Image 1 (spheres, one colour):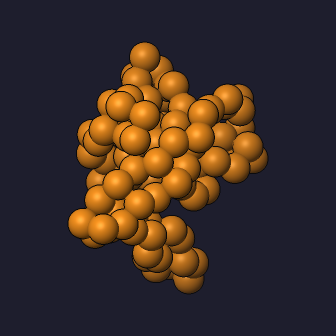
Image 2: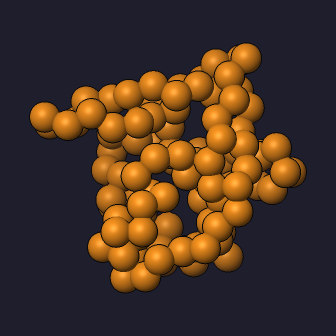
Length: 98
């Protein structure tokens, strides 16, 4: 299994159902070294995190299969990049950032 740390639309059960075909159960966690920002995509604005040495983001970490991770990559598009991070809990996880 893989982990994905989320802070925005991927926490929405409607989005999870549309992208993965089911909703996920996750655990609260946080990530240091980033801060929240926004990014324009088309006519919409979406949350994105950017590096910031004093920032901390709170969110939810979910377990996903490698196949689900590919579906999430497709949903997030090339506007976001996926990197591996260590969460406050000590868990290794993927996160989408700028």
